[in-house]
Length: 234
Image 1 (tube, one colour):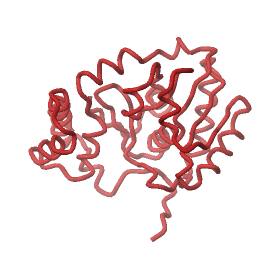
Image 2 (image 1 turned 60 degrees about the horizontal axis):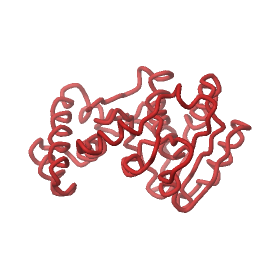
Image 3 (image 1 turned 60 degrees about the vertical axis):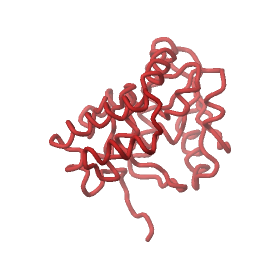
């Protein structure tokens, strides 16, 4: 069945699964999973143990996994994070789908997770194909406006070549700001993890390997979408 959604909005049960009554158990699950990861437990088995303990459905387990991290990973990410003030007048490398999907979710009413490391993450995912939604152009416009106001850039956006329609999103990005570059590459994560200009991402695997990163998704969501469906589990 074709995907006909026009917003990156919440799932049918998200208001229940991530509502006020569910959040204490979710936050406790994130704390427990982080404790297990800090002591070397395998991610898959640790998540099953925690998910079973708190009777979590699959989507809640995904949220817990995206929000948790070990003590070692937390310390490493805190040490490599740089404030927005520190990147004024500097180039940024942006994990394109990672940032766009989170901002689309925030503006479209979807779940935005606040993780233990302070990052905001979405639950959307592209699953091999990216579909633009009504919030796509507004997301790019607000990012361009805010980054210009903050004196950040120029920016290079990196998009995954294996994801369908990545070329179309790259063209939209280039059209939005003359100081932006957008590249469709086989593996953005590998490029983002290499030393160079500071990066923008909330991808845990990249954060654990990069030299310097900016928590831009959270900064933008808090600035332009304070009433977003934020589920802070950190």
